[in-house]
Image (tube, rainbow, N blue to C red):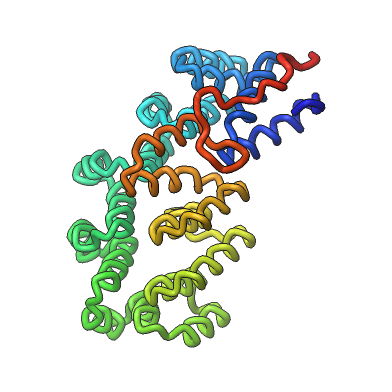
Length: 325
């Protein structure tokens, strides 16, 4: 920070500091970049200062000048800093078919279940899918099952809804119903039954033969309560850039798993390693343990280099004020 003047290197340094919630470093770097004319940094600085209108105006000006990424960057920056309503509002101003999917994903990723439910009840299949996913992962598979079964039983059946019926039956331990579906030719029901019964060797053989998606191994490990093995499997998914279909990123799933099982030290280690999802789940874990003020402080000010939660006056004063133009 004292010696680097290269803009690209500083952008990478800022991103790495931000992913670790070292805001005492990332935010002064953003200010330097903004002062040097970096428009993305300017947008982020304005958001950090609470000037959402200024950030939006800057992005729209940038967009009018022909940069196709300006709108996407604004939405990412708003979401990254917790301004979900503003991000959703910006998405609604777009005039293309993908905006609806992006709004649903935004609501799902930020636990806006009531809004997802409203969209699902209005006939949005993708919202229903994401809502079912969120309900199931929050230990509410009965509600998820009631949501997706009508679409699974329709003629013709909705394939994603049928898969979620299988998932919910497995989570509820209704193995007889899973067996019935497997006997009727439902391949996922057969695999899910094997996972629920702990037949890991057979599942691995099917994955190796290309007869099953390798995510079923992780599912089986979680079913069996093998948390350490599940963590190792997720780390492998992250290293290999594994695509699990888009409902949840492996880095997010790892952070959530560690938080769900109260593995605070491991979660902190993920954050120090630069897992960008770990900070959110660390704050959630603090909230779950009644440490709401600390959680809010963490979200606002991040961490000090020694791992303690930063305060408003935790900043690095060595940073130079400007970059050479």
